Image (cartoon, rainbow, N blue to C red; front, side, top):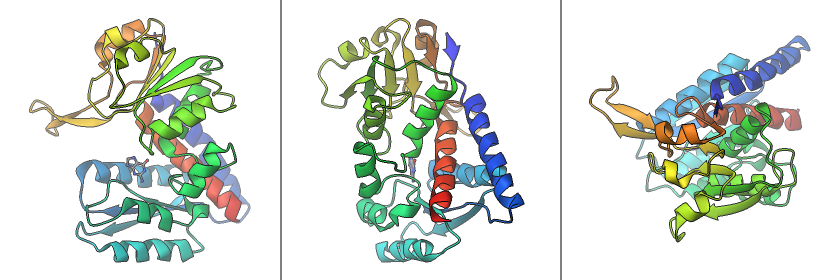
Length: 291
Ligand code: GUN
């Protein structure tokens, strides 16, 4: 069994980005710049956004964090996005999801200039992705593709089963794995909350992507021996014995599943780190297209 270590794969991607940024700076150009908007004080969102900003610094990108109150009006958030759309020094814009109830996520996603849509959630980006045109790929599926590439996982002709159909992970993941790409060309099955006999699909998967957001949902008897297992889950589960009062759990029961697999991503230290690598690559791509 091989551990698909996100620390190793993301460090490789980040080192390359750092060198590219140094070359830009050496040529007298400005660095790529990511702007993140965080609404409210959701603990997990705070952690993710802080990590995104910190990683920008690590590779030499500029970053801006815009913080808005939990009760901010939708119109004020849309104005903040417009200001970033209009700012020539900003290459990429992301609004951390989820958003409070008074705000339409769809309106927010559509307000971002598609040229700065480094999350790849705008319908224009999604449409391009579906048609196989160059586009911003949502960061988590992009990170998983970078992981498959880093560890040179053979995907061609394999049966991939994706559990979860979210716009952030499951749906774009299914499109990428079925696309005619170096680490695509899979036959893909998408499973979701209405799938009957989910385990029967999972046990047929050469590549199993768990992106349903239910801690330790995938058990050993749902996994084919020798499968590649990609765990996208990052749920905080209360644990009084942990320093922070919670532990991060993946969607896969790692201890019992890992010995059965050919390769598996750990949680934490797997897909989460690759998500940031994907976001940074999108930010550089946005910069290159704009300058
Ligand atoms: N919430 C969970 N994942 C993501 C992501 O990739 N981008 C944003 N903006 N919000 C998220």
